[in-house]
Image (tube, one colour):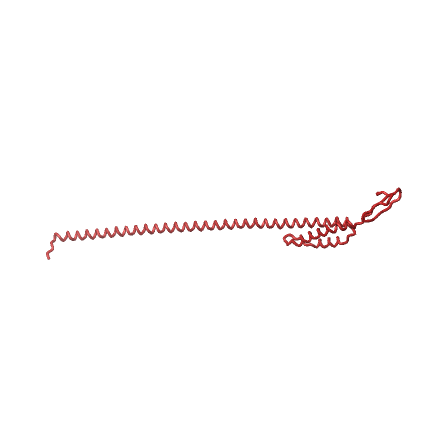
Length: 191
């Protein structure tokens, strides 16, 4: 084995140069790997942030849509409730008006036919009739209609049997005639 002192330093320099090159290559590879890893982490972080932002925007949009839908449903319900309340109020007003007209009709009939006693009973029955806003008014409607129909037929009968009194005059003589269809006696004239 002969080692040449001149070749040894070259070999050592060459080995040192190869080692240095290898270390530099490994450092470059490590640097490239670190940069690649940093780039991938940055991309992953950006992707996660974008997904999170998209998710938050979607949740916000869904929340806003739900709030809008709830608001629209509340408004629709309020409109429907107001319409229903108006129908109830209109129905109550109509029944009350019919009731008042019927009471006035009975009052007029009591004046026109003072001897008809069952008008008082009909009036008392009507005065006890409950007409309350928001309650079921079908019974009141039915009673008002039936009393009106009954009065229509009864009034025709009462008119036929109603006696009236007239005063007849012949000179200074005065006669009062009372009947269903009163007529002055011959020679007398209606006063």
